[in-house]
Image 1 (spheres, one colour):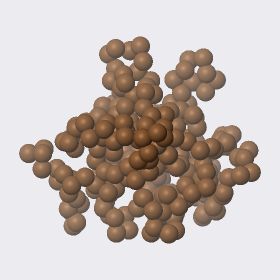
Image 2 (cartoon, helix red, strand yellow; image 1 turned 30 degrees about the horizontal axis):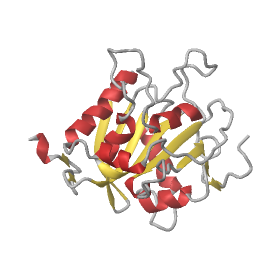
Image 3 (tube, helix red, strand yellow; image 1 turned 135 degrees about the horizontal axis):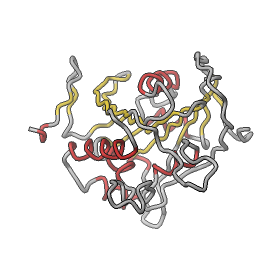
Length: 254
């Protein structure tokens, strides 16, 4: 079961009746590289179309055939949402009992620099394992990355605000939440993750989280197991979302 230190928040249960999976044991998580390196990676390209291209290329390489890109106001925050219909971040170790399935570990793996399922396949993209985490950060400062299994939604927060400025400290703090689909309960991986989502995502007002809205967005864009969802906010000044039609305007595409 989920370790007793988890802080559970009950929300209205939904109608899903999928087979239950073993609940993961959540734990603190950091990217295994220094924050200033992450920042340098996100600044490598200043053209937003290259970031969208990288997001789509990673999804296509994983097996996606569609990518949805929409602009949306969530609360009073402008967001850019991308979602694909691929199989999601699966465990691709052929010796693993979970081979081919999304697991707690495989979800966390895509958040880290250097993780790739394309290793030893020179024809596939993703050789260096950097775009999954850095491409959305090139579009906005705060990014929620989510996927779905038959029993859980996994939602992690990548935020430039959480990058330590201490050059001696390794890593970048990554708060993440897990929702049990059948019960509607949300769990945080460590104290403060709910607060981080409230402060740095559209799913909160700075002091209280809005997991009901997060669940609504996850159910809309991840209607079945698999897929990869990005909800990007604090957008780059090279991107503008039309306030009425929600058109996505990227001047450098012209």
